[in-house]
Length: 365
Ligand SMILES: Cc1ncc(COP(=O)(O)O)c(C=O)c1O
Image (cartoon, rainbow, N blue to C red):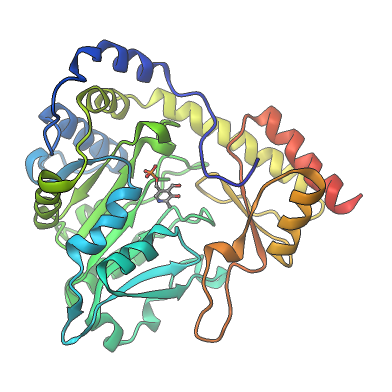
């Protein structure tokens, strides 16, 4: 019930209508980089969402459609990470716990995955000051997920700026996984490109990953885009031309329509906000419930996540994710996810209420 981060809200009407209206295009090969309308819609959304100057990004140089973000997050590992950097094995850095695909990117690129502890003291983001010069010199990609999965925290702009500056100094790519950027409680989270624009930093070494899966409750559409450094966009385009999957034209046109509409997204936010209110109300008496500023996961400190997850599954048929499955042991053998349970609040509030009440009944009555 609460395990997968898969939106359960019905997809917006625009989706089925636009797919149907483009039914005649299934017999056409789609172009690798989509079409100008799509890229313009992506830029218009980025400009609205992050208040970017209208001439900051170019449709031809900075945008590439992708079939969801999981795929390019993985593929970037072999497209952009050399096996060696500065005479040493390349390293791909990621927060710990993390979305599992970052590890896949390191594996496919032949790089060493380096798990950086993301602890509550640092807002669940890796501590940049602790990175050694030796590690930075061999870093090829740094994955940062903000709003973060699993914790739903948001990196502030000075943190993002510092990371971008490090990327330029040590010449690595910062892959900003921003697929939860539209699912927030009150204030829209900062984004990597926004920081580039605000501080006059340009977009080199920066790539932002955006998706309709959470924004439009449409993970089955497999649609998103990457935006940023023109060199990386070009390389990714070459990869798609040879062996990647371009977006089929009906999906491309539907995506253009979805990126151009904000109304359905506001409805999504209200839906998740309601679920978090329920979580605070129902679980609050028994746990220290921290409503995250963004995302749709509750990262609940329960003592031992695995034991509690097992109990909920055995006694109440409720599936959750033990936090330790999203993390790895650090050098001291600690898995920072161990005390936590990840609860995906993706169901309709009426179902969420039943599920959360059952959690309390199972654990405390
Ligand atoms: C942090 C994070 N990044 C990326 C994705 C991939 O989403 P999609 O491929 O549907 O865009 C997910 C999906 O759950 C996620 O949680």
